[in-house]
Length: 239
Image 1 (cartoon, rainbow, N blue to C red):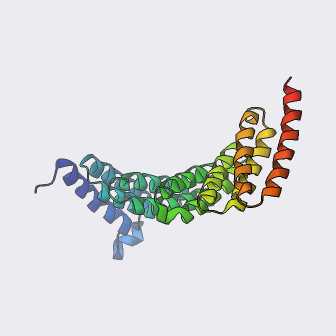
Image 2 (spheres, one colour):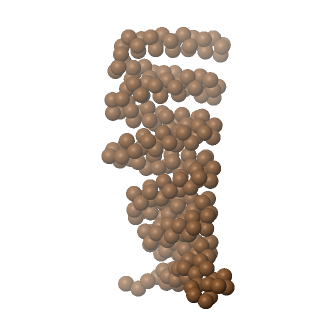
Image 3 (cartoon, helix red, strand yellow):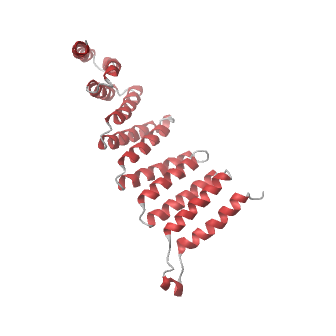
């Protein structure tokens, strides 16, 4: 099967990128002919774009990875991170597992560059992809925990709570009710301190109470009484 014009042009650019990545050798290297990783990275990205236009998604992902590797060699961690994200997007249709690995690399380099909000966002995306498969649920919990840590480090409490609630739901689904109670209550108490989230606290306390019933009925009753007293005070403040 003949190659499309996009693929032919991509192959030409890849050959040029390889030359830039390798650099000149021997006598010519004395005149500044060493590797030019920045240009090589840009060329690999251009070739990847063409491959995606030709619907060669796996090859496009591989080329983005090559571009990211060149950015790392050029000490451009932020560029490497964003390029790994592009690789992950390319792999979505051809190799989701490899795409997840690229996202993990992106998180690593975003964190190294101090871009914790970006690291948190991508880490949450990893968690969302892992939760779709029951076999990777434990990994999803760890991924949501890492995302929550990044969000908390950036002061994004509401975003962190979203991650904690996901963890709580997963813990409840596998019978880890004690951990689920801890996380539901944590989110509920924090919601009470936020005027925009106060109305959702009741539902969170209810979920915590239901999980508590599966652990200890007496403690569940105490938690309910404690919540009702808080709810009465909250209702009085509103009126």
